[in-house]
Length: 443
Image (cartoon, rainbow, N blue to C red):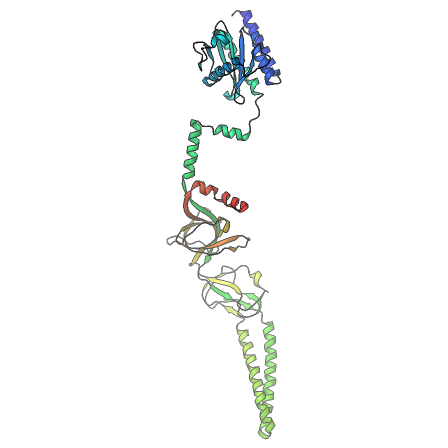
């Protein structure tokens, strides 16, 4: 190729690129590709193959419209489909035509042809261009056409419809070696056995604590201990307000003195008067009643100060929450606990319930020291769920700490991992979604 011819080919290449970019539809672009490529190099026939849809010839040189039902187009579609599957630049003739197209070659095409695959960015195959003429295509022409094919492929990709997300997913899952490996890996991962586990809030509570109750109805006047304070047996814990009892005792004492005086007068009259002897029995009964009332109130005054019946740590909220508060007989005020006897109480949400057995190992991760962990064994699981302070239905799980480890501090809170039976990973991952779906659908 001479220098002038090379310059003309380069100018034609630039002009064809501009014409391809200006095309506003696939038919307009196809007309430019199959007809105006003649300005770059000579050929007798050209056909444009598109990969869109099921694939087919969309433009043929010299024809204003393509009819896929004609014998020529049917033969040309069979040839281009075979060339597109083979891929790559191919120079061919009747002897090397694929798909048994060589028998009818002479009836439809000149002696030599060149197949140009049209690809877009990333190697995405958009179609192919078939050029045919009597003389073979030399290497210089093939290089020029390869550059032109890139321009045509990029222009053709601009008319490709935006692929739906489902279609992209199906293309990824289309059978192939990589897809089969991915699916096999996912299948193996779904069958990997894992243990069902639930994270639940937990607290370190005393085991067999001594419950301190209010001995009578009244108002708490003073607390002698602070929360988490160690106390000894016999130490005062709190006092009830004595103002009301003192008033009642003063009234009872006055009534007792009055009854005693009446009894003395009746005793004196009984010596000389028969009626006085009869009245003395009634007055004596009233005196005994007043004496009992006075004795009862005196005993109540002795009970206003509550003392520790055994040593331990005082477990309650805040002193200010109790001072001045009215309590009834038997109402819980505080606990006396032994720091060396503690247990773990977890609240397993009802929505995440798993099957637990006594003796299963659980692990406590304290909030204050997340790097530490304490092992415990389940002692019991509540039969029914109860609402927590946060209003969540949960099952109470009691566990005893394993021997040979330092015990956590009484009242320490944290998160406990409850582990159940072994299940496939697919069941572990889909358990909650399936449960939610069944709740919504009633299935």
